[in-house]
Length: 131
Image (cartoon, rainbow, N blue to C red; front, side, top):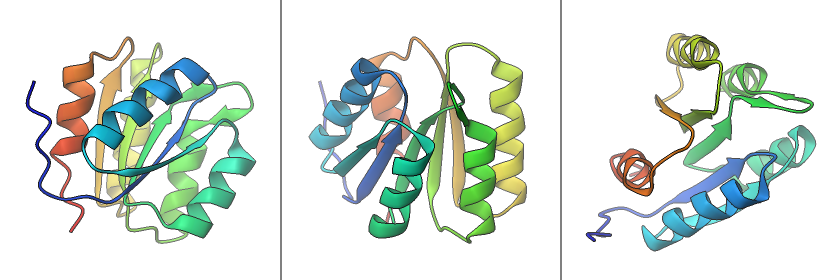
């Protein structure tokens, strides 16, 4: 397995499923990222404002959290961030969030469908230029 990564940066993952958060964290750490994890909207916003991540990995549909809302929040604050949107269902909702993020000036927006394969997540994160 090639885990080579040219650039390092910070990554924030928000998902209500602890196993998925841990999965993303393990992949990102192996690629050289500093990783923070959030399980709800409030924790996400606090960590995002405090740490200014280069990459945000977010689930689009979670209890009490709307991924489209979080994409909008990032864009409204002028966050210079790359976003990876993950969904287990509602792929059209993820497409809407992607289009919103692109239109609102986020650096890049990628979508992945759960269950996410390790190689797909690794490639999505590794191909982001955080420099």
